[in-house]
Image (tube, rainbow, N blue to C red; front, side, top):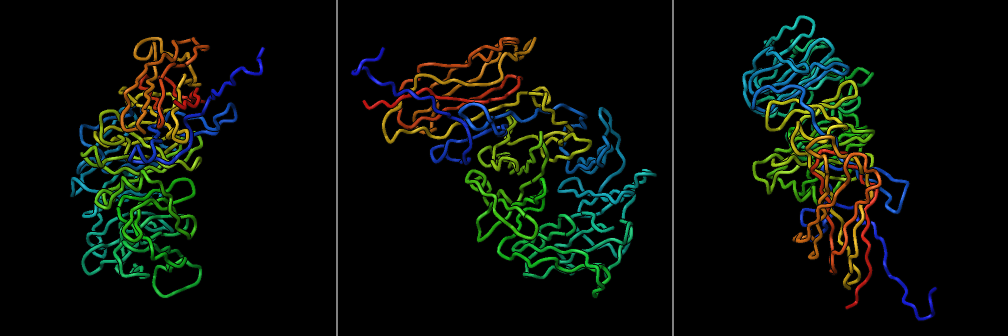
Length: 488
């Protein structure tokens, strides 16, 4: 029974993980999520659950050289991959070469018209005919020399020219035939006198990313001058431009791209005929102009979440990075591969409800699998870092940390038969992490195991980090710091 003079407990259980902006400097904001996604959570005090991203299982490996491009037809498990100068037809567990290109490096663009696969390396494009399996160079003299890109829209393949006398033009093939071209079948985006960075199919239009503008072009029902019948679909946005030739991808119903405005690089989203920033300090800080020009973007879906991914490839760990934007939660997170400068999944394609990725460092093709917790047998790290925990300048006494998660899911054999999570605590705002605890998650069947660690001392600027590397499910439904103010 409490008396009138009995002290009142000031202990609180404070949620420590949740939403928050990412940042490159831990002192500005220590919130990070690595290979993690956000899901709404109706139970408990924490309004979101944090789930691990899928692992990777190997489909096929074609040597040590990474693919320059990959294509798959919806509903099929037949992939077309360009590795160095060779083009391969790939099926699970097998592959065979179908042709050679003139170049061994640089981007490759591929798209189909239902009968033909257009493959362009920017020098000598080819047509692969699905029915006959013929691999033929485009020899039409009207094909624009050195044209780049390659998308299919309204019965035609479209390419663009960035140098020479035809610079700034977008050319189209003849209807339903990528081998036949007419030198008069072109249009010139002209909202501003800039160069073309990329031509992208978006809904029923071609979206032209210029170095300082964005234009939409589409077919019109009425007859207008020119054989193509194409004209601008909307007023161009001349304030924002593209920066990377492969720095764009469609995710959900939106098109995302790496762009710049007034010298500042960021991520932008086209919604209909409007452009809006999808900003986050950590992403913007990572994409300096010198890095962004080489950015590679892709997209994929996981359990109803549409992800846009942007990779800044580099051998320098200080500048390389991979970020993903979740269209479901509106949150950014990082993707990492153990021991590599950035995430190994570079180009993603989907077919039959499954997502496949080419490896950024080898000739491997992998399948994303939500029931796999490794990357092709290697470590798949999972990490979440809290925001700064402050108490108006006073010290906080940390009595304990409790993690609510799916436990008792240890594997029958190693690795992961007695899985642990690693809890780290920083008392200097995320600069250093001197306190490290390895906490058991529970062997197989230990479903009532409490994941808890005690006695972390006190501090005035605290951050908490959770990391899992064991190959087990990663499903965090709540994480709480049991604390009280310390006025000493």
